[in-house]
Amino acid sequence: MSEPLPRPLLPASPLPAALPETFDMIVYPVSRLSGTITAQPSKNYTTRYLLAAALSEGRTRVVGVATSEDAGAMLRCLADWGAGIEHVGDDVVVTGFGSRPKSGVTLNPGNAGAVARFLMAVAALTTETHFVTDHPDSLGKRPQADLLAALERLGARTSSSDGMFPITVQGGALLGGPLEVSAEKSSQYASALMFLAPLLPDGLDLRLTGDIKSHAPLRQTLATLAAFGVRTHSNPDLSRISIAGGQTYRLERAEVPGDYPGSAAILTAAATLPGEVTVSNLRPDDLQGEREAVAVLRDMGADISRENERVTVRGGRPLKAVTRDGDGFTDAVQALSAAAASAAGTTHWENVYTLRLKECDRISDTRRELETLGLHTAETQNSLSVTGGLIVGGVTVNGHGDHRMIMLLTLLGMRAGQPIRVTGAHHIRKSYPQFFAHLEGLGGRFEVAVNTREE
Image 1 (cartoon, one colour):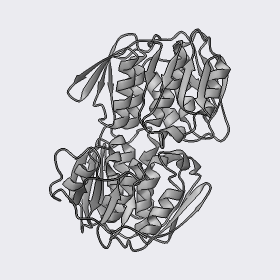
Image 2 (cartoon, rainbow, N blue to C red):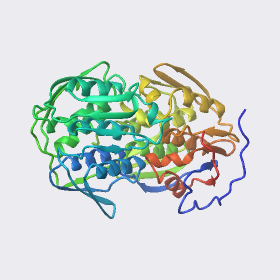
Image 3 (cartoon, one colour):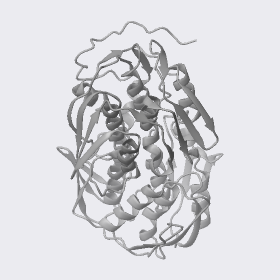
């Protein structure tokens, strides 16, 4: 049985300038959204650019760095490894350690899975690096064994708790060469090794095995390496990626593009409610797979237009269900499920098994929360189906400590019959700290409930 909504303890409008460290969010139904926002900087590009800058032999100015917890985790770990970190407004100037990160260091990447994996591979340049996390029930349960196995085949020694945190990597004088890595569960293992490759004497000739997941992030990593002057060669299907050794990272200035996964949530909210919303700073040729969210919403019947880096949604049109392979835009599937909940018919997201391996099980946990809100859903091992319908509201739903789940539940609450309470809403900071403020600026209405208990 759902818990009744408690009385909010902070005023509804506007949101406090400084939100509590932990909080739940009461989401109120609204009749329309209108306005313009600038997309936040990309989390994925921020972490990649910062790492490449630290692996450089000089100074790099990373322009427009994301303020998410993941970006903070990368900055903290790179500083612990010996990189110089200087904040200049919204930018960060990084003085790199090149191929010589400090050894004997303990790194805590928080709850940032990609950050942890990228750093684990680079740790092969050190004689010993320890990895811990203060999120044992989230990152601590995510699988790392395929990456650790690849590092061991390369000549490193690793220790872990059944392939999970805490983890130690002992590397040192590794040469490189041919190497297989599984891409069945995550593309992040291969991306991690790609960052390491140019700094090994013999580089790496990577062969990705299994059903390769999430090609788009791999292409983002290749683009990052190219921007920093690293030469690579890859097959069109990315099953083979060769990176010569003895190369040097170098780039004076890297400009972070806008974030498509978070913007997908704003665009979805705009599509499901009357009004006109524009999101700027979204490059039309971006390699982020979640750029596809624009096309998916258009296929569902949303009125969307683009003018260079500005995407405008004129909301309130009837939406219809679609069936799509979601592997290419996994970080937008949660947000787009809010559009599915507004659409006539049943939407099927197929080939999305990797959603089970995120901060929570984004298939089963999503199904349960949507059913709490009165929606009909179904799942298989590799798919999630959502049937459009009325959202009952008046209940508490569990954010599962997952920023993407919090986005989905918030969008549903904005068109529910009554307010809903989203628990652990502070976890939105992992990728989109301004999420509630941006929605409020467009017409959203929220109240903060403090003294939350973690679910």
